[in-house]
Image (cartoon, rainbow, N blue to C red; front, side, top):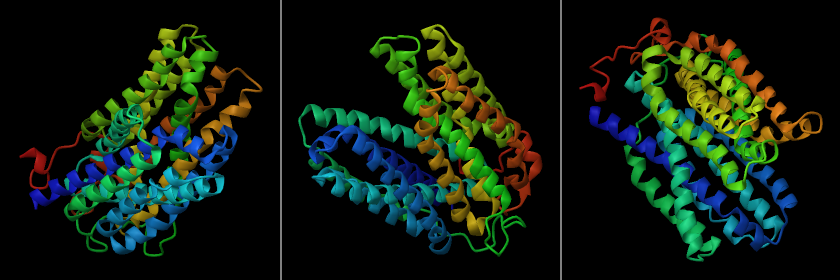
Length: 411
């Protein structure tokens, strides 16, 4: 049992890393794909909305499928779809074919996102301690590897079509190798089916509240992705090379934070992680918004990333543990609205720059972080899930003692 659980955890790491790598390879080749399709930046911007729309549709569909057929079946199928789809943009010759390719790629990415997070919840339930944040960190690491591999293939003048086709083949092989180690479905009702989930399968209000928080916090993440470099360039007049460190500081701090969050969450609980993490993020972004100095702004972006790093995994985990039999559907709600929030970052901040300077628009995501910190207690009703499926409210707020018989890493 211990060996199979460790193997299941390793397989989950594999799929998170693969997802980050596949989507990272697409991002690295966006300029090449744009040139091959013969479109401009404006058209590409509209076509990227199809990527987001496809992802949202995939998230909503696959949640129910995961609950019905089990993550062990749905995760490999989703990974295979996402892997095949990443080759499609490399074959696009105009805006229409690229739009269709991005719709399919977004759909596959959305399916994999929800199904692998649902399996991660299952792994976490079996471990009886927080393990979710590390999975999200590995997703980021997969993106880093994609940047390194993509830079190398581009320097060798490989075409986007050939590189993305190779990525597709690699993804299919990795999916096939990792799939057998995924955990089998748990018996229905054996876990955390609570009154808030119930047999009616209506999404409970608490799940929508968690989804709303995910939307706000992932909008904050989207702000860093889209506006951090521009902030240093336009507001503080930093050189281009220095401005690039703004996103680098944010992304690095977020990745490191996610690698450390699980151990901290096991000691102080998910409520404290969300409360203090969102508060730290608010402090960091406030420093960015008000800083007249480049070093302070860079430090602020790093603090912002460190604070945000553990927040989203806590929301995904709480949604998945709220009702074992509807874990996929609940995660799909939180992930879906969260993804929309990330896409909304440019849409919300852009128009505000017509009213106030760019740095002052960051006070809106600061307010969202403050709301998340103030409402962190909504993670509490699900409590911490034990192996028998009961909610342990005492552990959710305080130190977590490992239960040796169920935690393979504690032996």
